[in-house]
Length: 241
Image (cartoon, rainbow, N blue to C red):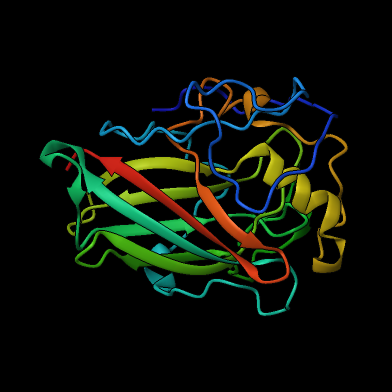
């Protein structure tokens, strides 16, 4: 179920982050002196991951994009290995094998493939299919995608969309993956050589995002690595199956 409507918000302050962007304070309080940017602790409790809006721009025909490497192939963006584990809350959060995991996200400029000519992106990308893919979880409940660190667009913090189905195609969860504010700011401030040239003027932090603003600790990823070497992102998403 959608928790909030897709509306516009703006924020303008920023700060740089460390090389490992996981949680710092177990109470989830603001770890920055900037009131706009908040790094949070990851909630690893065995409860269902919050459902979020599927939009914008879900994959039109996801069965056509069963692939692990979803990059454009243009060399733009910081490479990111994306490791997503799916567990079953009804079975004490044991890993779920054989479930379908679809992901999609924008490019470094905030554009989505398969769509175009809409308010958030004037360029038409209907004929391309980058940064979209489907994988099936292995015996450890894990899927692995090769992608890049997503860009951002006005009114949203950095995020990845996820839709999880059981083997029969029944929807189990629609949600979104979040990133620590400090990491997003660092990439968009210092990553121009990798294609992140928008900066952070107008960037929306997690606590002001209309999707994540009511709490993001259950959807927060843990990212390690550097822009030069590439990132590794991990998250466990929990469903009732």
